[in-house]
Length: 306
Ligand code: NAP
View 1 (cartoon, rainbow, N blue to C red):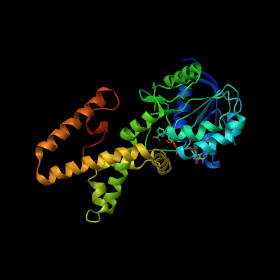
View 2 (tube, rainbow, N blue to C red):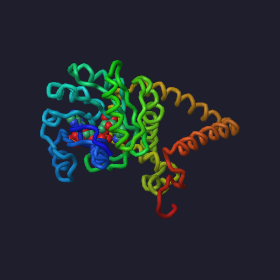
View 3 (tube, helix red, strand yellow):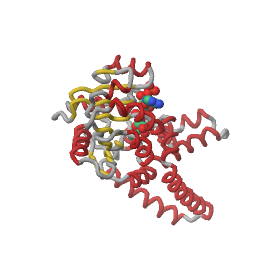
View 4 (cartoon, rainbow, N blue to C red):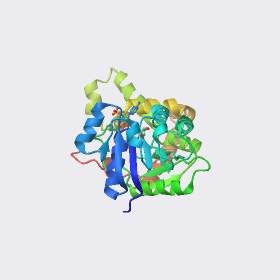
């Protein structure tokens, strides 16, 4: 695959940055990749495992001379990081991010960037419940979507180049406006995470079911909630604080549906329950047909049956 950028700088060296680094190496997409993370510990780990061609001790050093800067930090600190790197950006460079929320990140980052620097917010729709510099792998973005959210008037060449990088990393790329992105993600990711966190929290509170029973019999659905509920607390705190309106709107709808299902159970309305579950099953089939999950029994997990 052809090189897309001469030098790429990754700011933040967690799951997404490390996966992007390995995908860039796999595809030969950049001449050099520099990296910076806030803690000595993460920078030392990155050096130890060969994450980045050059790990820098300051963000300023990492972005100097970079054609592309990718902000891979939690959504809540994007603005502070942008302010820190802004004076050191090369003219004509592109700044992008991978944050899970877009309107808030645009409001935080945009005002700090100097004229002549292209700002193209982005969001790869790929992740795991793991975090940190050791958690990344080159295949994370394969066959996943990456949404680009260019602000009005952005240079088309700069967008095409960033698109080529993500395609080289294995993703399918689409453009979307920020408000729509935030609503779509509230439905597909943010509200489901909050519900999973709640379900696991409720099980923890229910003292009539012992902890060992919850763990022992978890294959009955609970286990899949616990995987999502193990996601990084800082990242998810920031997602809910910055995608407030869309998440609250979806949770309002969710609560109404939950009440309707509660009523159907109480009144013995089996037709309602059956019709509802038939509709939701079709959505699952659509996800599998779109190649976004496996239909292997037990989510493709190996091992003995419980
Ligand atoms: P992560 O594994 O927790 O890594 C976060 C990185 O950001 C770490 O290297 C951390 O440095 C650094 N960082 C944290 N606070 C900082 C600060 N104040 N200043 C400078 N650096 C700071 O996170 P991730 O999962 O890669 O997520 C990164 C971004 O991708 C987030 O915006 C998230 O919304 C988005 N995203 C995540 C997923 C997912 O499933 N995880 C999917 C798509 C998009 P230290 O290690 O030194 O603390």
